[in-house]
Amino acid sequence: MGLDAAFWIMAVIGVVAALSVVFLRNVFRAALALVLCFITVAGLYITLSADFLAAVQILVYVGAISVLIILAIMMTRDVQQGSPSNKMKFPVFVIVAVLLGIMIYTVTTTPWAISDEAPLTPTTVPLAQNLFSESGFILPVEIAAMLLLAAILGAIVIAREKDK
Amino acid sequence: MTVGLEHYLVLSAVLFCIGLYGALTKRNAVIVLICVELMLNAVNISLVAFSSYVVPVLLTGQVFAIFVMVVAAAEVAVGLAIILAIYRGLTDIDINNINLMKW
Image (tube, chains in turn purple, cyan):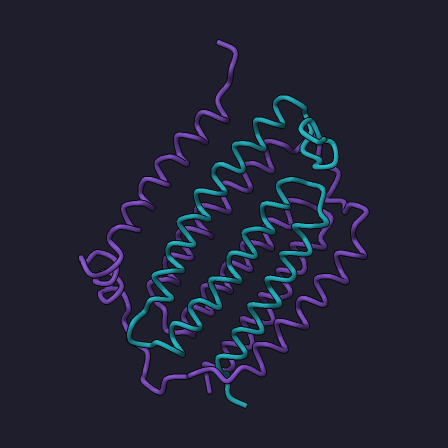
């Protein structure tokens, strides 16, 4: 039952890291807790036998996105007074708790059609065949490439210095 | 009790709700973006869990998770650029004070 133990360890660490992202006063420490949460999510992907996604999670989230976020925190450092909450704390907490209750109730009472086939491993080759074959997802892949290009150009244009 | 699909879905719901709480209550714009990333990760967990428990051979859930990651990367790049631009103009990233377009 190694997978079960791995799931519980990852789940507990991930939830604690997510809670500390929300409740830590120091913004930089919150970003580091976010990195820990991303790593545990990658571990969960491995327990789900999604090896390619785990690698992508480490590369994209732990590698790139967290570096971007930490860079933004550094650039806006002199105004940070921790991460205060607004006045909506209590009503939002009630709404989120109700939503969580509804989701857990729905998830645990729905009879899921669980297949008894073993998941594919390794997943890299079947994923590539899914993504790039003509009967697969080649059009969304092209659109995703266009989206990334547009996002890069937009970020450069927005963040550029205006005075010159 | 062995770990099944429900465990992953409940974990995903818990992470999603933590992210939602942070995104709705925090006043630092960077923290709000971080919480949105947390919510996207929670959704990814449930997509991958469905993929490996319900359609283990088709991998469609993992393909969808890859597209969610692409959109998340684009979102965080543009979002942080907007935050830096606002910071340059207002020297502040407190969401309560960024109300130029508030009616």
